[in-house]
Length: 203
Image 1 (spheres, rainbow, N blue to C red):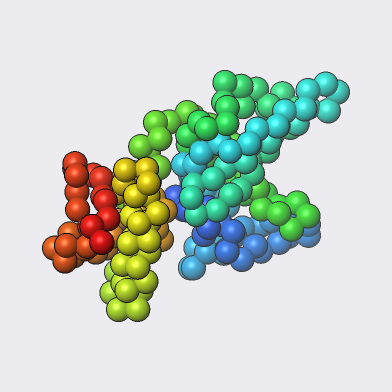
Image 2: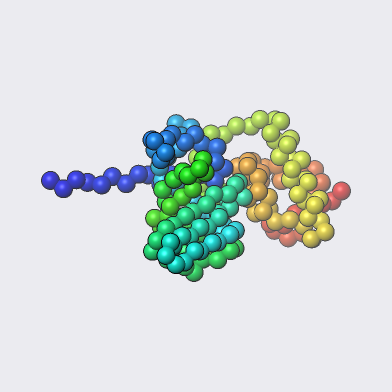
């Protein structure tokens, strides 16, 4: 009877979760990454390409440095698989589904699937991940978030304001919580919206 190949679930995570997960090794190879109660072998990431390196010739090697605003991780390919990186450049947003690997204490990915995506998918993925997290309303956290939003708005004043989408992408809190704090800031008259989705400082 033909043996069925069981493909591991490709979990959706922020890069920061992969970097803080606990690698469980089998010899020198990574068996899985322990994140909370999950044993993660494959992941489904959406991130920006911030660096690309291709070594062609006898020993073919390719590397992409990926950043999703929570951290950076590398995707690596060897041999003819470097063709997977063709057409991808610095600044592109990609979806990558791949296996976790470890070398010299560095966690990296070997891609099964690699697709170019619209940058808006970064926000969509953040919403997906955050909606699956348990909700907590810590007052200290909310105050820190409020201060952080105000700081971003103040710093962006020279550029004519900051996009709410940018605040959501750069914050570790859920989009719902961020929007609630922005609503309070608008009501308190500390910031205003010159046009939908844009915030400016009123101080």
